[in-house]
Image (cartoon, rainbow, N blue to C red; front, side):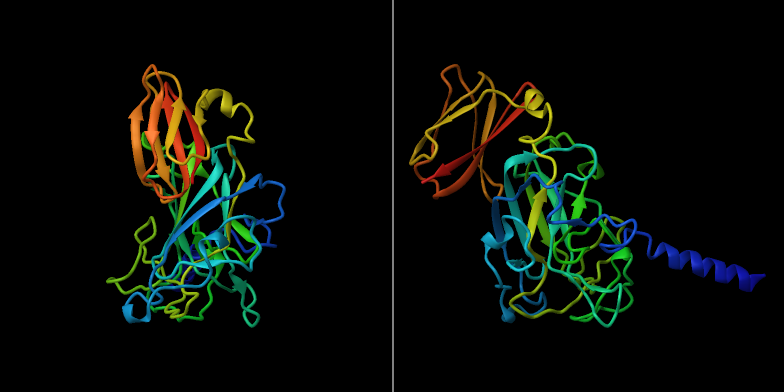
Length: 329
């Protein structure tokens, strides 16, 4: 009797270790091919903060493969930017992502199946966070059932069924979908106006000195070390499924009449919006560089000393939100 009980418990434990969605092409997968008609847009801005090639060997330097621009546009599996251990990328969009039924966007990496181990993949994982103001970021709950007794090697493979809500779960050209409903509601997060998505390499080292943890407190074990220029998560693209520009009725509820000129601008930016509206200007890193309430005569922001590049003006008033992209020349 005891033997049967032990076997039963072992089988239950084994099934619990592989309880998440399977790879692309298998029944029950959540993988989304980049050619899917569900995608209505792709990220248009990307700023990368590189991590080290190997977290415990600073003398090796940072990851360096690819450029920031490789993280924008449609996924192709070829042009990627490597984040390095703990590196991060902040991506922005022409129209804010919004929360509707089902997944709202998907993150693409260049993972691949190991030929000699069917069903096993070389996966480099990343946490995913979102923000509606570029300042306050909220992380998707993510779970790893990969064992943590032994450190994975730099070229080891893993079973995607043991991974949930980590970017990099699926093979190249197949995105990992994310549903904004998975994040708890918070007064600082407007799920109907996601302006920034941040992707953060998990490192993958299980040494407590360097380890990162999933939402259940497990250490995250993935291929490590990878002391190369292409170290860490390789960001290919972020595909948008739901955004303000394509969502039915969203603009009527959340948008307002905001006029920004001149755009592009060399210096002064004039903002016309309802009196009392609160305006914030963010750079591509999600940092607030200016904020003020709109007066009866409008708002005038002096951008003369701002670096050239893309900025976002977020205007909020009486529950309505408008996001406008501005180019500083």
